[in-house]
Every structure is written in structure tokens, then in C-alpha cells.
Image 1 (cartoon, rainbow, N blue to C red):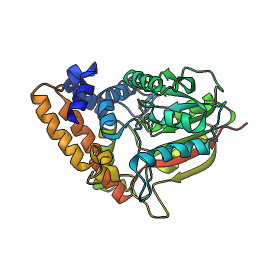
Image 2 (cartoon, rainbow, N blue to C red; image 1 turned 120 degrees about the horizontal axis):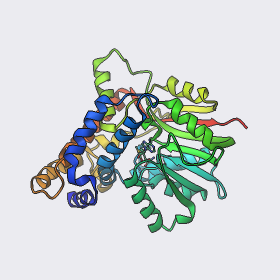
Image 3 (cartoon, protein in one colour; image 1 turned 90 degrees about the vertical axis):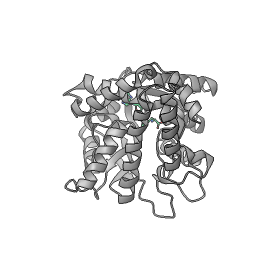
Image 4 (cartoon, rainbow, N blue to C red; image 1 turned 180 degrees about the horizontal axis):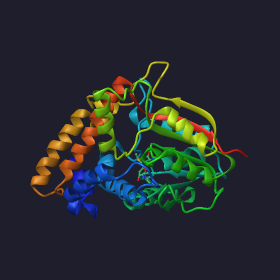
Length: 340
Ligand SMILES: C[S@@+](CC[C@H](N)C(=O)[O-])C[C@H]1O[C@@H](n2cnc3c(N)ncnc32)[C@H](O)[C@@H]1O
């Protein structure tokens, strides 16, 4: 498995100087201000640096859908990811003939699944060129080019006219925006009047105590390891939707399950006994880190690969603890309509 990772890392331009890039990322994290108006160029560089560094690790450890999912006992990890994607398509009533935007589309895993499931055409928006190239390739390989297109641009300034889309969704990506009114305002602009937006947001829950040093440290580690300048609370998300003109139809934390369930952070905390979950599990990550150490010494993977893995490990460990404490959710579901 590490050898596949090493060949992935070798493909990349950034790979030649990953150590310098991770240093620059950490420096940017300290200096980039948390508002799009304050420092737009800074946050763009910050986002791109982060995704240049981690995309291969994400794909290696998680697959082509870079998100979490609520899961029920007996359901495979892969099936839970697909169900989480289908849920968005279902809520937006996507169907053949509609055109929807996927804001922050990653390497295209969710948009391919949603296109297949719904028959709608999906336009993936992503500022990271490396990911867009990979997504284009996967779409071609899957024979889905007739249902998928891409806009390689910043999601705060999408290269499309007002009222372009029948629906817009975003899966764990609007969390990368420096502020919610900025990204929601742009999504509002893109939607046709009467059309809907749905997303899974990262949020701190009501259990988060900003005076508690343990809570604060977990939040900070998720931000640094997850490439996030801010993590809002739920009222801030709801208020931001309304502030740009949306009619809020539903907001709900899907991490709070009523029946028997497997916690969303289980793929990061579990033993990784199944092949599918091994790489993302604690043991799998340890094996990867140790293998990378050897491969880095042998110069088979670029210098800095271990440091990148360490940054992601920080995030994974903090997410598990924050998930157990119930202070953080990666699946605050929002559903809103642009008035007709
Ligand atoms: C956690 S990933 C989720 C990807 C995808 N939605 C999925 O679930 O597989 C966040 C995505 O947002 C994209 N992103 C972050 N900042 C962006 C920006 N300013 N403009 C466009 N895309 C951005 C990243 O490149 C990445 O693809």
C-alpha cells in the first residue's frame, strides 16, 4: 500500500519540495486572516497549498469521496458514503434535465455518484487544479462525461452567470471558505429563483465550551490539520444563510442519530480490521507513517511526506476526540431555497 502512495506522490509537482510546502502551509495558517475581505489572496494560497499537499493522502486513505457519513450497523463504509451523497440528491429532487453545481467537488467521487443516481448533469467547482485534473480523468474513465463538467475557479467567484443552476450542493467544502456570508452569497447568486441549496457543514455544536482548554485545543488541531481557517457554530451558519436572502427549509445535525448507529468518526478510530477501512484506521495510519519514514529515508517518497502525514494525523486524532465529546460535527445538514 505505501508503494501506491509513493507512486501517487511522485506524480505531483509539489512532490519535489513537499517539506518546503508543508512549512509554507503552516506559516500561512498562522498569518492568513479569517475573512475573505481581509485577505482573499492569502486564503486562496492557503487552500491550494493544503489540497496540493493532502489530496493523495486523502485518496489513499479514504477513496474518491473526501467526506464522512452517518452509518448504521451492518452497512459498509462505502455504502454509507454513497447513501450520504444520495441523500443530498434526494433532498434537492435532482433528476434528468437538471443542472446542479457541486461546490468544492474534490476529485469528483460524490459528483459521479450523484450524476449516476439522479441522471442530473453536475458541474464541479474547484480551485485546486491537481484535483480537477484527476476528477476529469475519473469522469472520462467512468464514461460519465455527458453528465459532468468542471469550473476550475474559486468558489467565491464562480465563473458562471447569475441564475445558472437548478440546484447547488456542497459536501464538506463550504467549511473551507473564510466566512459563510461570502460563500452563501455566491451560491445564492448562482441559483435560479426558486431553486435550492443543500450542504453538509462542519460546525462546533452547543456542547463546545470556548472556555475549555481541551475543547479549544481539539478545535485548533482540526483547523490546522483540516486546512480550515474557521469552524463556525450552528447559529452562525443559520444566520448566514438568512443574511444573504435564503429561506431556510431545514438545518439538522445528522451526527445525532436516533436509532442504532456507528459514529461518523469510527473509520478514523476503529481497528481497521476490514481491508476497506484499514488505511484510514488508527493502525493503518501508523503503518503508513512508519512506511513513509522508511520510504522518505530511501528517497522513494519526497522529503516532507512524513510531515504531511503528521499534520493529517493531528486532525484525525482531534476529530475522533471531538466526535466522542460531541463538540464537533462534519454533517450539519442545511437545506435552503432562493425565493422565487
Ligand atoms: C474536504 S474536500 C471535499 C471534497 C468533495 N466535496 C468530496 O466530498 O469529496 C473540500 C474541497 O473544497 C475545495 N475548495 C477549498 N477551497 C476552495 C475554494 N476557495 N474554491 C473552490 N474550491 C475550494 C477543495 O479543493 C476540496 O476539493
